[in-house]
Every structure is written in structure tokens, then in C-alpha cells.
Figure 1 (cartoon, helix red, strand yellow):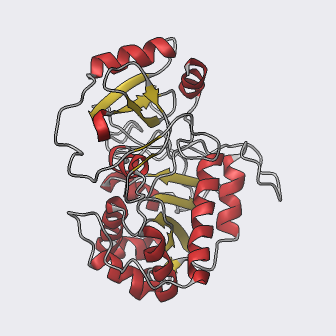
Figure 2: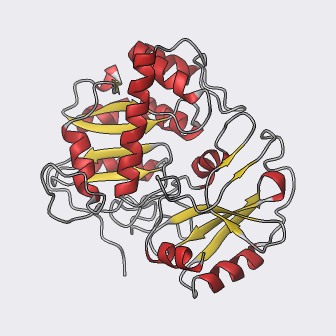
Length: 340
């Protein structure tokens, strides 16, 4: 465990990538318990344990109540956060997926909730214009960093070069993406990996619809990439979106239930072909996440900026961050440098 957390302290880990699960649990119950009781483990106790296990290379920024007496913790390493769980006694840390009786991946659902982006990072810039977001520390998922500025290698899928994998995607995207027709004239493309049951994807959809004028002015076309990572019903809904295109995606979002965090499409009726396409999209997202050392979480934004590099942002951007993404498509744009 110490070696694993020390490795995380040096670089962010892929929480859900193949082979990365150290421990996991299969637990019952639904979501009624989620924030119904105080955390069994205090922030101070969790911080002391993680600090000791990593020789002070990582820290805990947040704790919250989890299922079956577990406490969720957000561990901050040198470049980004990861979600883990602590037992009620505070004697062990569990890193991996927690699944309930409904076959819902609670770790991924909570990662989308807790590890959401509230400010752009040091490259694109945050709410304060200095690359650090707000003055107070924020819990943000994988950074929108300049994604591996190594020279891309043609025809390689090496996970050691994150930008290579991103470039492979933008240069040969799947045919199952769904364009917002009101941005169809754009010559620049902003890809958005979205789960039909993801509330932050829903907020991103609303943000796009509210900023159509700015998107058209910047010449940006939004292409949604349906994936399935949050709930058992996600795969059916994602496949139905692929089958029905824009009208189906819009129905899912316009009838989104924010209380249950459930998209508006049914959870049955998709063809095997479209389920396969949705799975392929999900595999693309996992591949990108693995290559760039980020947690698999939605939304995930990918785009090729005016400087020729391909960037990503894992999480929901704030308003200033959204504008800075649009600015990155303009000629002469340069990455925002971190204030020292």
C-alpha cells in the first residue's frame, strides 16, 4: 500500500484503469445513505494516515460518508486527486470500485460528483486568471495540462505519450459521435465524452445550449461521444443516443431527472450493434484516461487547439474555463502559464 500511494504522490493514478484496482468491495444499498450521516473517519485522521503512508508526499483534502460505514477520501498527489475509501476504524485504505446490488459503480458515481472540475488548471487558466482557479483550494479532476508535450510518434498506442492517444482520437474519431446541429458550421471541434446519467454532463449540455452564440463566433462545433460508466442503465441509454442521434441525446438531456441523476431515455430497447458502438466509445475514453494518468470520469473534453497540440479537460469547466477553451481555438493562442 505504501508503495502504491507513494507512486500516486509522484503522479496521478488511473483509479479505474485495467489492472489498477488494489482492493474493492461489493456492497448493498442504494443512495439514501450517501450524505445521511457524518463521516466515520475525520479529515485529520485520514490526513495523518495518508501522509504517513506516503512519507508526506500526498494529503487528504476532503472526507465524506460512504456506504456500509466506509468514509470516502480525496487524496491529493502532486498533479491531481484520486478517490479512495477508509474503513470505519481508520485502519485500512481501499482503492478500487465499490458496486451495489443494482450493479451501480458507486466509486465512479462519486468520482463524478466529488472530483468535478471547478476551475481550469495552470495551462488554460482558472477563475482568477492566474491558472490557479479561485483563491481557496478546489477539488478538481485530472488537469487540463499540455498533455505530454513529447514529440508524437505515428501509429502508436503507447500509454506513455498521452498526447499521441489524444491525437489519434481527434484525427480518426468514431462515427458514433453526435454533433449539436446548432454548432454544425464550426470548423474547430470540441469533443465531449458524456454518460447519459451524468449530472455534470447534463450541466455541460446546458452550458453549451446557453452559449451557442459564443460557440458560433469562435467557429466551434460540439461533438458528443456517448459512453457508459455510471449506472447499469447507462449502456442502454448511450446506445439509444447513438441510434437516434441528436434528437435522442436532446431527449435524454431535456428530460434529465436531477433528483435521481437519471437521463430521460429508457433503459431498454437498444440494438446489439449500438451497444457495441457505445462500448467502443467507452474504451476510447478509458484509453485516453490511462494514457494521461487521469481517473475515468465524465464529462471528458478533448480538443485540438490553434497551436496544434491536443488538450483534454476531465470534469465540468466553470464559466471562465469554458471561455478559455474557446479562446484556445483562436490563432496566436498560447497556454496559460502557472503563476510562480
